[in-house]
Amino acid sequence: MARLEKLHRELRTRELVVLGITNEAPGVVRDFLDKNNYTFPILVDTSRKVWQQYQVEIIPVTIVVDRSGKIVSYDVGVRGEGELRATIEKAGLGAKGRANRVRRF
Image (cartoon, rainbow, N blue to C red; front, side, top):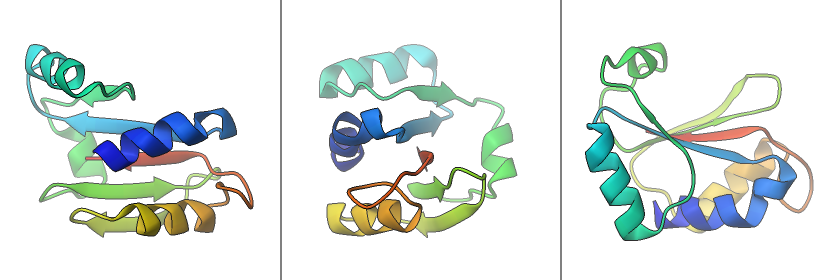
């Protein structure tokens, strides 16, 4: 999550949205975010509706969605910063273009 936080802070002005999704209780999530100084938003999905929509069965999952809503990348497991940057570039952001969303489950 630290890599996602770094990208969030660096690229948010280029329309990159990092959105975490969890099924944990809101208080647990708030404490975790505060303790780790994470600033990107987290959706609390206790009913797992979003998990079902994106067919998430195991975490972590990183889904990159481009501006048109197309899933550009669906990766299970932890990704390195270089891999994340390459995927963001593929979606049209980074130094070469623009993307829309990175979602972390």
